[in-house]
Length: 221
Image 1: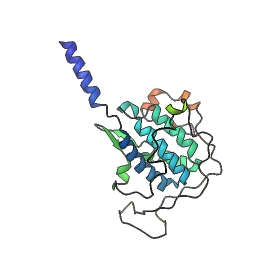
Image 2: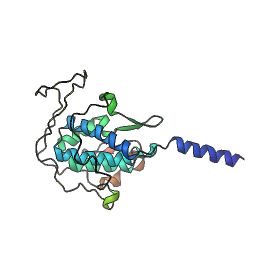
Image 3: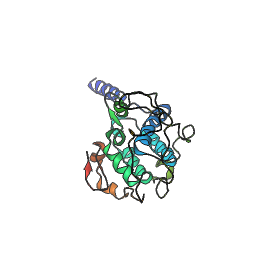
Image 4: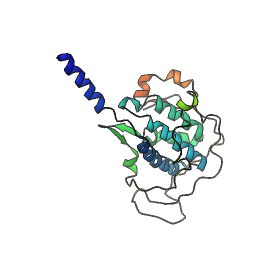
């Protein structure tokens, strides 16, 4: 009898702590997150498409609380390191709602909404890959390797804002001035990606706690 009760409690706990991300949810959350990353980091169109794919792959991999800072999160940082310039990646690591976009509070919660409360407002159009991408460039689909390594994404100008909103007041602004936009200074070189060897120095505990070593070698918390 005791074993039966213990089994039922274990199963109930597993159900309560497991909320697998659906394709539609991952698509919606990846779009909103990527839109704001493009706005604050100054992404090019090719970066915009790649970052959307990377965010989607991370989000769709989430099933339990333990997944938040596990392998999927670590791979996301590696992939973004290959896509973003050094300046963009450095800024990305300092912004909590980009670096650790999801947290657990009786389910998955998204930090980006603490900064951008209007969930219907996007600065840009949808990425070209929005309707078709289903994980074809993920590590799982690429033999356990990053599909983005060795490719160029930072060429070209920063994307133009289509629907400008003042994030502090929520007021709409159609002027051509971009005084409130966060500017990202392009780096001269983009071969700054985190080396795969870093994985050897990153313990499972660090990944679960959301600690990831950047280029300085210091653990971010």
